[in-house]
Structures are given as C-alpha cells and as structure tokens.
Length: 353
Image 1 (cartoon, rainbow, N blue to C red):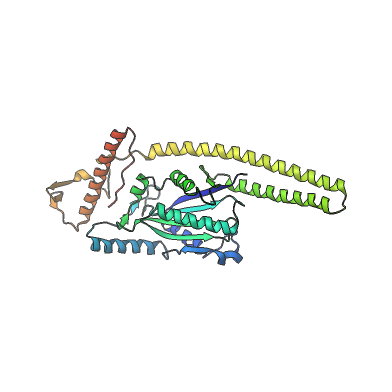
Image 2: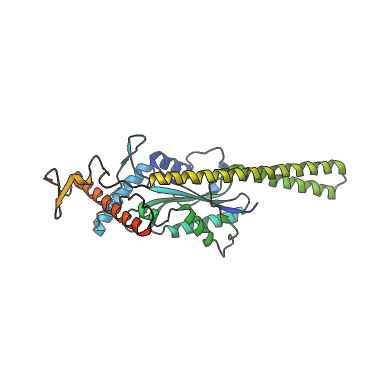
C-alpha cells in the first residue's frame, strides 16, 4: 500500500481531559499497547508545562495580570460558561492536541524521529506566538508519534485568542494537512502525503497491512528454502499456494474496509454539514445573555454606564458584564457586515476580552 502521513487533532475540553492527557504524556500510567522496556527511548522536546488543569488556569490568570501591568492592557481570563447539557459552569476549550505519525512501516525508527522533529518545527512555525504546553515523541507504542499540545494563549499579546485562530483558519485540520504536505516538499519525506479524511477503520487497515507484510515474508522464506535445500517440492508448493491465497484474502479485506471507510467519511461529512448549519447561526444581541443580563438592561451617557438608574463603577461585576455584552454586540454587527459583503453566513461572534 502507498505510504502516507497521518495528522489527528482534538480540542482539550475540561479538567478531566487536560489531566488525562498530561498523565498519558508523562507516562504516569501505562495502557496495554505501551512497551515499558522502550519508554526510556521517548523524546521530550518540550516537557508538560503544568502539574494539572488548575495549575494551568492559575498560571494563565497570573500571567494576564502581569502582562496587563507591564503593557498597560486590560485583558481578562476566560470566564466559565454554563454547560447546556449538565447545567454546570465550566471553562471553554483553551487548548488543542495534534498527533503526527505515519503509516506502519513507512519509515525506519531513525527516519521516524527526524520526521516527528520536523513536524514539531512545522507546528511551532504555524502557531508562532502561541504557547506550547508540551511536545513529546513516543517510541514505546506500535508506531512512533508526536503529541503536540498547544494553548490558545498568545504569549505576545497576553490573552487567549482562539476566535482569531479559528477565523484565520489556523486550526482548520485540512489547512494544516495541506500546509504540512507543502512543507515536506524537497525533504526526504516528500513521498508521505497526509490523509484528508477521518480515521474510521484505520486500525483495522493497519492490522491487515501488517498481516499481509508478514505473510509475504513467510512466502519469501518458503521460496528461499526451495532454492537452498532438498525438500519435498510438492509440500512447499502447497504452502506457497496457501500463503498466496491468504494474501489474496487479506487484500480483499482491505478493499472492503476501504469501501466502508469511504462510506463512513461521507456520513461524517454529512453530519458535520448538518451540525454546522445548526451551530453557526449567531444569537441576536437583544437575546444574548450573560448571567441573566442583556445589553438593553444598561444605559449610558458618555463614558458613564448605568444599571437600573445606578451608576456603575469600573470594579462592579455588572460593569464587566456590560463590557462583555458590548463586545458581543460589536462583534455581531461586524460579522453581519462581513456576511452581507461576502454573501455568506457569519459565524457566532466570540468574546475575546
């Protein structure tokens, strides 16, 4: 089969997800597919920067305060939002993980290490100003791979900028795959082209490919025995025939799996389109609420802001809510203007303060 590059990604959502990734990358526990005798061969390019999720949140809050004081800015830590499913307040996603690897057997271990270090370099250039939480090459699993954990925190501007990253297409996995394909040109890995779909069925395909490779090696060994020794020709011929039949069966299995994979990809694309059509419709500013407050609940004269006739001071929690509602209204109107200009639906605005 043709060798290819594999890029996966997922948003790191919530405390449990963040802590689980930290424990896995630091090898605080070992799953069944980990070869402990090779764990000391893993390569840490950037060690996991935080003990846990709470440590990450407190560090970002402290950094924002320090950079505001130094730069005269007024950036704020992200606020917890109410989860519609659980009813509990939680932080929005503040980080993302990318996993770079390649099809089994495509590279030697030495080549694989060079390939994954090049992937680390590519991602640091792609997300130039953003914080790298961790970058670790795992060599103690079936196929070497890179875990690259990225924070949406802009280390230059001193604030989280996930909305801008999304608007610029920096977190679009297809854009990343295309950029990586171009990045590999004129390198020793230019023959590896990223897959452009989901990874449904990928493990089954990889397993079938390895089985075929093993059977072909057995076939070659049998043929060599025929040349080197005086064995019963009919018996070896029968073994060859059986192995060739097994290879043909496995190749048919791969063909069937590829067909199912294509069907699954089509179903996923359709579901994504349906989901985007539901999620992308922004809430009108008159209906948008934060903690039960609407923009229309406030009044203002010049730079003074009033709520229910009461002048709000800058340190009043309601004043902060007013600023966020005002940001939402400005972003909403800006996006609607872009929508009218570009002739396409604008995505819901994000609060970036």
